[in-house]
Amino acid sequence: MLMRNIIECDNLVKIYKTQDTEVVALQGLNLEIQEGEMMAIIGNSGSGKSTLLNMLGGLDRPSAGRLIVDGRDLLKLSNKELVEYSREVVGFVWQNNARNLIPYLSALDNVEIPMILTNKKARRKRALELLDMVGLADRRYNKLSQLSGGEQQRVAIAIALSNNPKILLADEPTGSVDTRTTQSIMELLRKLNRELGVTIVIVTHDRQLSRMVNRVVAIQDGRTSSEFIRRKGYSEALEELISIPFEGGTHEELIVLDRGGRLQLPRDCIDKLGLSQKSKLKLEIKDGSIVLAPVDEA
Image (cartoon, rainbow, N blue to C red):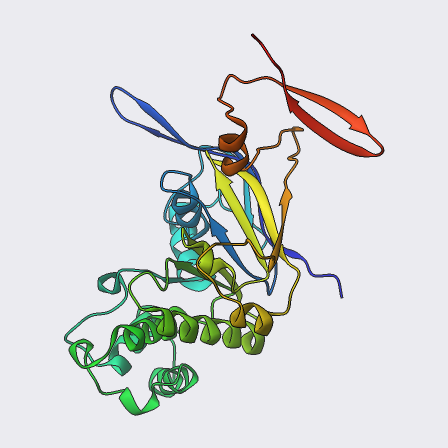
């Protein structure tokens, strides 16, 4: 069955301006995400991944390019329409629980809040269903101080799902929990993706976390640089989790050629070859393969 693209980024540009400087966070990023997909976006600090997440969530606007989410052109939405989009189409899970939870309320009350803001009926019933779905039905009356870090993040996931979003955006969702809890939360996200059909986009710098999804998109210097596609079953990958990301072969790395004919080499390749931003490469086609080789400029 052919799935439609629920997210399309075409030559996406984001420039932050101050009185004296301009910072280019995204410079022509291209990305497509299918409806019902669970994928991860990775990149070092400053790569543009958090900027992209904020734009997908309607918290920021692109400077140029096209950003289509669920058939909506986010560049053309009014401020009111963008608020409605943020409430109805996407749900957020943040690394910092202070952005997810109100500490003096119970887990149940926290899950109800987004539904109060959108005047949804049968809020209490829906909140109880969601807490049961994330495995916290017996903790529904507990406050933040009475929950572990993993339990707090489960409540945050229930909150993000309270308005039945089509897309769940997770910013470093396991950044503040241990390895065992990380696996538990990722298993929960996979379950929700499978049973609810919600599209899940995880932004992280943790490559080991990204081993737990089928597709990983790497962003470098504000552009899509490569993709990692799973070539082993998820259960096999869990058994083989090691500290060195991707080596050993749970994923196959693919270099992305964008619509402008540009490609980005992975940072480790650049470092191994001793290349710089001004380096020149020679391209040759040999037996149907493309070969890139540094040019000796000495």
